[in-house]
Image (cartoon, rainbow, N blue to C red; front, side, top):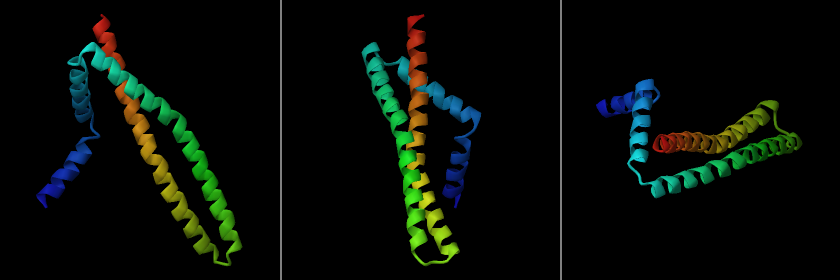
Length: 126
């Protein structure tokens, strides 16, 4: 039971300012300790991931919207009650939303890392 409480406490603390600041400082230290070539390589990798996800997420969201609309139209042809149609539609929309949520989280993470690397590069130029 204590491990479960500790996991919940760790999860909640990960969203607090001090925990995020500590993670940021750790990441900055890691980037500052890298050589110039390693840092630029990391920058290019993260920038490529960010740009790919930036183009991919809206397409995925649009595709998911089309699937929900098609599913809804398909359900209109099946003689089920309105409640069942609504439940099927809600379930489909929820699953598709979760498919979009993960790439969005990846996009946010890549953007934060990209900004951190850019800050580290600016600190080296000074």
